[in-house]
Structures are given as C-alpha cells and as structure tokens.
Image (tube, rainbow over all chains, first blue to last red; front, top):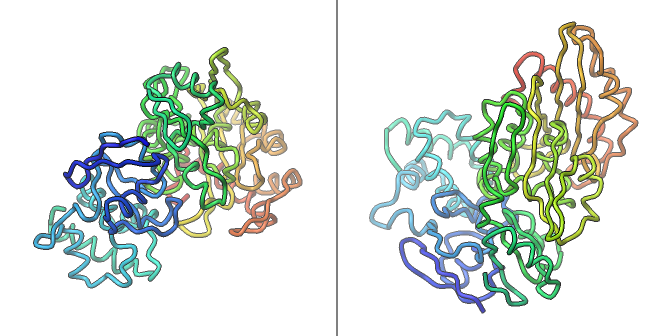
Length: 156
Length: 292
C-alpha cells in the first residue's frame, strides 16, 4: 500500500491505498469532502470539478497516484460559511440554485475562470460552461448571475 | 521510482525508467498520459489495468519547439497548451482548433496529444484527424529501438502495436499552407462530435489547389483520409470548385458507424457540409471559424 501526500484546502493529508483510485473517490470516501459530486464518472458533467495546483480538473478521471505533493482546492475550500466567494454570492443573490448537484462544480469552474477573465461576454461564459451540465437546465439564470459579478466589479 | 506489482501508479522520472517498466511483464503496467481515457474503464465496463505507468514527470516528453520548417510537440503536451501555443501558426490552425474545441476546459487541461493518439478505441478524437491533415510524423521509442512513423501508417497499425513502446513526440512540417478543423456536435456540451473533418491545402500562383489533405474522424471506427475528395480537389481552380457536389460524389467511401448519439447514415450525410465549411473557411477566414 502506497502513501500519497496531498495538501487539500491548506491542510496536509495523507492517502493510503490503491493509487489508481480517482481523486474524487479519495475526497469523498477517505476525507469525507462530499461537496464534489460523483455523477458521470467520465469528465463530462463537471460536478466533481476541483483545482489542482491552480488548474481546473475533473477529479473523477484523475488518478490520485500522480498527485504526490499536489495542492488541491475543493468547494469546501473556496469560501467559508461567514464569507462565501463572489461566485457563490452571485448565485445566492440571483436565486439560481435548484437541485444543487451541479453547483459545487459551477462555483469551482467559474472561480478559476474569473481569475483570468475578469470581463467576460455572455458567449465567453457559455463557452467555458461546456464542461458543466445543469440537469435542471437553469443555464440562463446562472449566466445572468455570473455577468452580475462583472457588472458589480467584484473579485472572486 | 518504486516498482512493486499490482494496484498502483508507478511514476517514471525519465524515459529509460518508463521503458524498463513496460519491459517488465510482471508489473502489467499500461502507460497513462493525461489519464482521461484510462480512468473511464469502469464506466465502459472494462477491467482496470493492474498498474498505471504515469508519464507526467518525464521531461523528455514535454514542451513544444518551433522552427521555420518544423514543429515538434512532446507527447505529454496538453490540449490546453497546444491551443495556447499554436494560436499564431496559420499552417497548423487545424491542430489549434482541435485542441481548443475538444471536450471541455477541465479535460483539455488534462488530456495530452500522445494520449489522444494512443487511445485507439476512442471513436471521436479531434486531434488525430487534425494531425493527419498536417502530415504528422509520430516518434516512437522502445528500449531497443527508435522509430519515426508517418501518421497514416501509425494509425493503420496502432491497434496492434507493441505495448512496450511509447510515443515520445510528434513532428509537424511547416510551410505555406493553411489548415482548419470542423466538428459537428448535436449539443454544445456533454458529448463527442458526431463527425469531424480536418483539411489542409495550399494554393499555387494560378489559384489551383495543391496537395490537399482531408482527414475524417468519428464517422467510422477509425479516422481516415478522404482520398477521393483529395483527388477531386487536386489541381482545381478554387474559383470554380463546387465542393459540396464533389463531396457528395465521394461519400461512397464511408460506412458510417451507428451509435447512441447518431446513426451511421447521418454521420456520412453531414460530411459534404463539413467539407464545404472547411474549404470556405480556408479561403475566406484564414482557417478560423468561430462558430465551429
């Protein structure tokens, strides 16, 4: 059994087990970080999106064995109950959350997106949303909420 | 590098280590590049390999080098990196578009050019037809040999190639041609292309097409050149080409595969439109069409 050292949401953690296991399974089952959702299992739906060393990654198709020393941010690490980030704030203000399954991934995707694209167009947002599926089909209101971040000049 | 058999990821630090792991049959290791295809084995109801040989730490497989006559791309270069670094190379626009439009942002961060080439059972690759249209040469290495294989031969043999070799880099000739890539999706997200087509042409001083290359993927089980349409375009004056008619005449070359996303006949029937859009884009818009 091998050990993989990870820094998850600024906490140093160790995983012991089959290193072919997906990061998503490790997050949910070993570390009880269940905010990342297990849905399609093939990197299409975006519900399991996390940041690995600052990069957007579908954790369901990322083997944990290649992540020795990696810094990982999950939905549990982007804000706090007292201070949610600007993506979460916009989603709450626009009342866009429906079943909630896609929202951790949506927040992770657009938190990364806004770091390099502070003034996106509606089309830019739609293009970047191609990896995040909302089974409630609430896309337009999500886009409206994301555009409000730009309009209000908030920073994620 | 730690080597013990079973249920693990082996991280090779260099090419020599990686090839020695592949030579060791007891380890039962399969090479893993970005991992985006291998990790879907359970969804595809396939057995997960005994060990994964991760290539992510191998410096020899990274990086893009450009000269006036050739581009060399390391096998571990990601789709995202390709999409970013090839943005101003008009002759390789097909590859830039394929890398930029394939899958979705998070998969593009992970998936590599080498992984895409080696995943022979992936039915709808974008980069493979783009590389075919650009006449890529695939550099392959085992512990005993190094080979440079034209992509046509590589694609024809990849299902039966030795599991002790690795794709190390891809070489692309550069020149006064233009290329583009067209793909048809039923929806914008959450699926693979129903059909995709890459085209590369150059035009001589008389306005005639020289040495056209057209590669098609997703329509059949393996990508292939559309030789009939290449022949029909070769030497034709661009001002007189009716490409849709020419393409319809050459559709008999294809036997479309039926799939849950589209029936085989549909994949074949959309090809004239993709070919027409590709040629019009090359003639009008320098290879780039924001709607594709």
